[in-house]
Length: 198
Ligand code: HEM
Image (tube, rainbow, N blue to C red; front, side):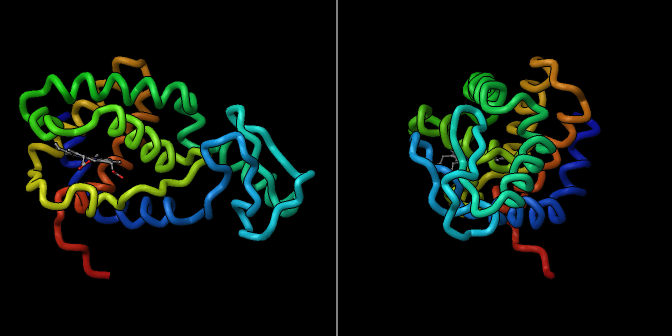
């Protein structure tokens, strides 16, 4: 943690812009149902139903072959994929909230929260932030945490629990560093700090 805390401060502003851009970059792909998407997640144009790819059991359709190639490359190169995809991220979020809910510094924030919903949202958010196939369509981090009066200590406690979870899952350090940089990118929004001047 000694290394991670200063890293949060340094990466906070720059990464916030990056992750927000990344999350907004691609239009919606397939929905969570078995239905196939009708709009290409790369070009935004209507899909050709013959140009499809299957990823984690879901079928995604594209407008042209170049879009399919680009999308497949993005998935293969993503942190999401390197971490082990849906199964690994879902397991990490489950283990993370076990830690959060037994951490006296922060557990009270979740007293009145539906934790099934919270775990699902966190899985969806982190999956999208790590380059998973389904864009985040929930609240932005500033709105989600507005009015909670969160402090650096709260933020660092959450980050510490996330890092410990990944270490216990034997995730390689290089990937943990990338995860922590993405978590750090939400710092200013989660703590409701003024937005950095452009
Ligand atoms: C790495 C930093 C954090 C990330 C990425 C994060 C992510 C999220 C996400 C994705 C949601 C759901 C938003 C939605 O409903 O659409 C959420 C809600 C929530 N977060 Fe965080 N969070 C972070 C830090 C914190 C901290 C430091 C606390 C408190 C210690 C906290 C407490 C909560 C609570 C209580 C909710 C539920 C709000 C509600 O349903 O009314 N979060 N967070």
